[in-house]
Length: 545
Image 1 (cartoon, rainbow, N blue to C red):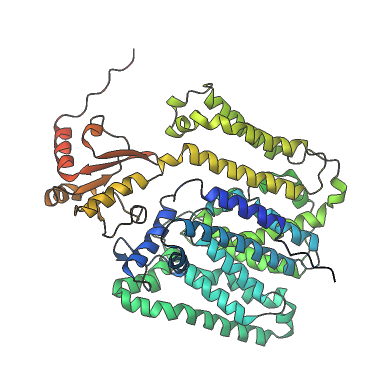
Image 2 (cartoon, rainbow, N blue to C red):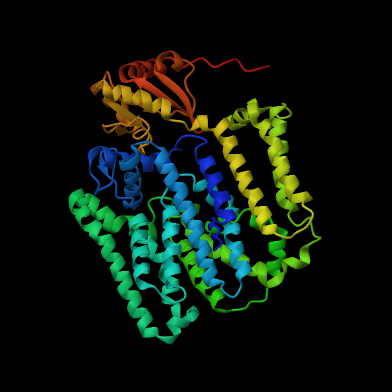
């Protein structure tokens, strides 16, 4: 009897996973997203306090613990490092793509070719790929959303829906409910099972939501008791109501998300074939279209109304957008008619070639990088070596002999371009974000018993990198004189826009950080330096004639 060939993962999953693993190890953890997530996980691990997340010695009410627990599970097996969290992040992203493909096969069951294109449409998106390299919660939330909707599409599996919904609640809190609320409430509009038994649909949905809330409360109630009254109030009320009514973090105008859609859906928004297909579209409301509309449109509208906005808040909606794009393409222009139209992707090709020309211009001195922002000088050194790669990718889009498999071709080129951009960033600009040298000096100071203060807002950026065991005093400029007087042998970290020319002779450490400078000072030396700086500011250079 002949042996059955092993079932291999799909090409798109292997391609994305290999390139994501390569890209995520190009540089160290990025502040402030990755370093903050790692800091919370580290403090929970180091203190043995796995119920209440902590940051800088204080309960951290902004996030719920599932991602931290997954990091701890790997650390328990492999030891504490930043390797496991990165592999975990890639695994979560791969799971999201696989779950999205499975959901597409259910939603687009009458259009299998369109369903097959959905994962290719998703892996091409540059922003989700690059953001997914950060150790953040949205990718795990997006996975939970897709799994929950997969469970209720077709013949509902309410038990799995409750588990996925509960996992999402433990990932990002009550916002998980928003992502599934409208498909659930509008079930009879798009689901034949809901239409056949409306009462049963809503009854079982209510029971499943109640079970998922029980999962969340099984953690939140004991955590609220253990974390104290202030933590309990922030956890159970302020973090949700504050963002909805009058956001205290990331407040944006009502229309802010509309231009951000161009960022989220790039490169497909720059593909003329998609726009031609969209304008030629004749609206057709079958069950697949109704499901996508019930998921995408009202959820996006509510996010526009919420004052707290970030681009990555919309990541869980991207599978719906991918399926909608696949439907638009499948309903209008059959791929078989496109065999001789080779210039359809020319805007994307020109963008890649233009980027290559900019890199070359910087590297050979056609543009004076020293007169521009700091990033221009950083890129000018070796950026030209990356130009041939972008030119080659652009040429693949322009010179491919036909338009068959255009989605797969564009997706592959876009994904490779994103990885190349990540490599360019790692080799040129990451030094402005690398806090490992500063964290090592802070760790040595704490080991020597020196108190450390951070001037200007501390978000845990040094705790994991330095494996710090003590909190850092988070102070403001007005507090600096009193703190240095109270701790004359302490250490102060500050972030001036530009360093005083005399600072390198007196500071313990100076490095670039983002668009500013990071300086580490002995507290006593800083107090004396500030006193001298006030009485005799540095002389300015004579203006050029």
